[in-house]
Image (tube, rainbow, N blue to C red; front, side, top):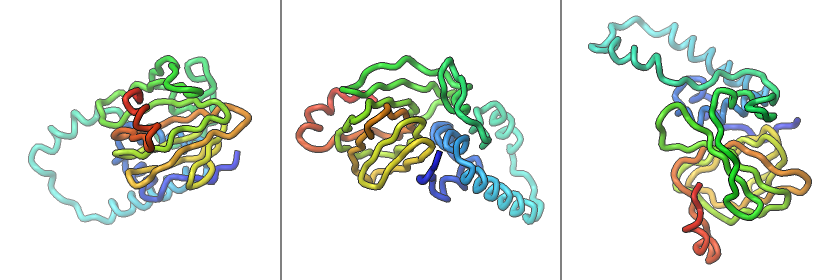
Length: 214
């Protein structure tokens, strides 16, 4: 597996510091389970963060700090980075970080495209789901009102900014407009964290928009 597309340094630093929401943290953790280069980068960010904390002078806790900290202990945590090849998860060959999540059933959302939800443990405005697109599928040109982070498990797709194969990470935001095309050969299966909504472009997109329920 040759991985060429990685999360930005800012994203890896946010993961290392624990400031990512659960949804996007899960997609990054999935990439990390497949990418030794990014696992090494996260460990470096964690080390730097630890050194900075050690160098800070002691300070008194603010009023009510303990009361705020105790409830946080029960909140779901982003899975730590670890080397883990795809394995049997829910009876399927999926990346290990998905093992503790409930997966919905696959359902068709368009010609050649299936969708299944991933149930998060915490309420969030970012949705996580898996997408499976048949070989040769051309997705409509679209843009987003928020962020869209994608990690590929199998197969590959291409769009204006490059090719994304197994293990690759695609980090899109409101500024990007693209129309991914799945390569021939095998279906492309991805994990996606979507914040906001998808806006289909062109006259055909406007006709199909009312039927998009991702």
